[in-house]
Image 1: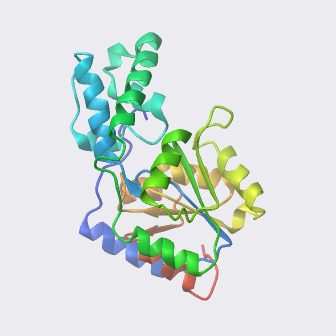
Image 2: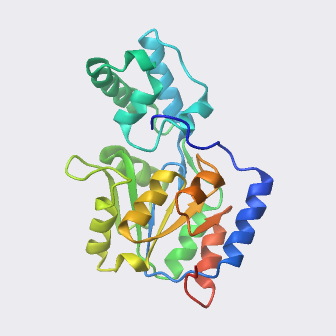
Length: 251
């Protein structure tokens, strides 16, 4: 998370392009789906920004507009801290201290403003009816990954929920995704990986999975395409449409 690598919100034109893309490249068949969490299933941006800015204010450092956090998050808490600190204040001691402070602050705020994106509940219900095993793979610490999934998806429709853990490299390293494929007993090439950032697209490609990018999250269509998205969808229901089409993933 060292620089802005894409612009933020999708425009109506980008949404129309994404819908055409989903239709024009052919349908998708899959035996399992792995979802990113922040920016894909849950809109966590406001709580993350509020926690980060509270820490910066306490340290007497400049704060950031909420939208800037779209580009700070995605690679784990340490990288979030390195991005939100001033470039001349990123010594290891302050980074370590700020990681601790940010974790404590987020613990106070993690469900204040966070909500599932519109249409996510219906999408998950539709996937459940199709009998596909669903998983979560996040760079959010495991404790908060579990907390948010339990809070906002109380029926826990996921077979496995994996956050950041010391023994597994964070995304975009493919190890976490490949471990889920092994646990599921499904070949990586038969798994759709759904996410909203370059990190997720790189993870999917590295694991040999099918990368599907979403436009309702933290990044834009250009970033997703540039990092290998095989499909880009503008609304959660479009994932069901891909799965319901008669042929496999083309192109």
